[in-house]
Amino acid sequence: MNRANNLKLLHSESFDLLIIGGGITGAGIALDAASRGLKTALIEKNDFAFGTSSRSTKLIHGGLRYLKQLEFGLVKEVGSERAVVHQLAPHLVVPEKMLLPLYEKRGFGSVLTSFGLKLYDFLAGVKPEDQRRMLTRNQTLKQEPLLNPQDVKGGAIYAEYRTDDARLTIEIMKTAVKQGARVANYCEALDFIYQDGIIGGVKAIDQLTGASLEIRATVVVNAAGPWVDTLRDLNKSKQGKRLHLTKGVHLVVAHEKFPVKQAIYFDVEDGRMIFAIPRGRTTYIGTTDTNYSGSLEEVFASKEDADYLIRAVNQTFPSIALSLADIESSWAGLRPLIHEDGKSASELSRKDEIFESDSGLISIAGGKLTGYRKMAERIVDRVMKKYFEEQFTPCTTDKIMLAGSDFKNSKEVNEYTAAVAFRLRLFGVEEQAAYLVHNYGKQTGLILAILETLENNTGVIALVKAELQFCLEHEMVLMPSDFLIRRTGLLYFNRPLLDELFIPVLHLFKEQFNWNNETYELEKAAMDHWINKTNNFAV
Ligand code: FAD
Image 1 (spheres, helix red, strand yellow):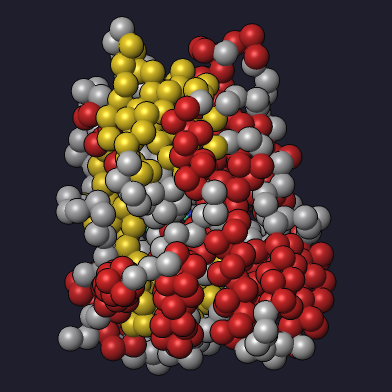
Image 2 (spheres, protein in one colour):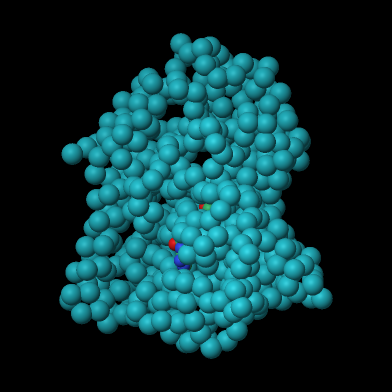
């Protein structure tokens, strides 16, 4: 709501640290730095989480697959981080048992899998009650009757967590702001400001008004994900290691079309592994891993990607006959990995790396959503040791609860959800309780308070009106896509509701931002583009 003032202050103040990029990496660094007392700023050229951080598999996971690549250090770090991130936001990072079927003719045998999962639990320090459990053939088929009885020879259940990546990024960003960070979306770094050959800030543009601004900082961190090398190029420092982008696609179908009983991680014939994860009224399936060299701004699933995933499902679950026409939605993200000669997309390491240029630009790439806190700790330790040594304090983000997360554990989340459902009954929308609490945690109370003040306050449109008001006031929502894609996930997980709400939501934006008809039509076309690009495979 006070974005203009915020940008003015970004321009007039001077910062210890400026972060470019508002994905999970940038948000994590902003929170860590601000909580250690650094005067911190962050700019994001699109909406927060516009890049890879809204297009992942949405798991807080240890990366079982990386054991195959013998990346024990990575598995230990991200595996251990799962429980920490769950503690920081128990409503948003939710335990999810994963079923791993074992087959006669592909994948690993049961002895090797049993050992691998034991190692996985050991490295990550998983509590005894959550440790892996091996299943017989019958137990596996009972757990998931859709599996092929001709093929399955057993299975295993192991512990992971699911989340919403965009919401996690936004809550980390809001927590950083609470700690004093100054952040802005739709503000792009166009060039660097140098003093005696050393970076002292950036020249930026406000994408909404076209106004230029300069932001001064002692240190600039490049956390631009797939765009990291674009900024290194601008800094003339792209030497040695470089990014290798690979695309990963997910498809969303109605749960009734692919009614898996729980999250499942299955082998496909080409040796890759794919997740199928139930979420609300849908099941999502992914991912692919292919080299990418197209536009960084327009990343969507192709018909070929969709065919591959549909075939994988139909081969593994014989009673399921998905077709392209069943795809309700999809998303595609780019992994900003570090190039290694001679390695294929799937073989590249997921470990993060830090590069520092002669002019002082610190770039960070690679890594996982799950490891955001540790990546941030490494960057801020480095910045403080080099530039602010006398102020050095250790990282405490493992103790800073994320915005909306005033819960001790999952039991409290469930109790709160039941109380919210009770209150929502008055407005005829009690079935929305779980969604609201998963998305907003205790901030649901603020949304309900807005709902109570509305004149017509029953039904789902009234609730969305209250939700939008909350997001406008607390989450820097500026465009319909910010709300319909990244704050609510409606584009991906509730197409029928999106169809019902699309025009009413556009009218609310028109009213809120005083759009003229031309702006309204432009914004409608922009959202229509997203809708078409994410489900138009059957034509
Ligand atoms: P991004 O999220 O891309 O953020 C970079 C931001 O920088 C962008 O928003 C961009 O707009 C902004 N930017 C770029 N240039 C500028 C500029 N000049 N000025 C201002 N802003 C700029 N990890 C997990 O832990 N669990 C998973 O389940 C998982 N699944 C994945 C599945 C897929 C298909 C993919 C692709 C990745 C997955 N990952 C997963 C990895 C994880 O999603 C990424 O490591 C993480 O999201 C990267 O975040 P980031 O902040 O570095 O990049």
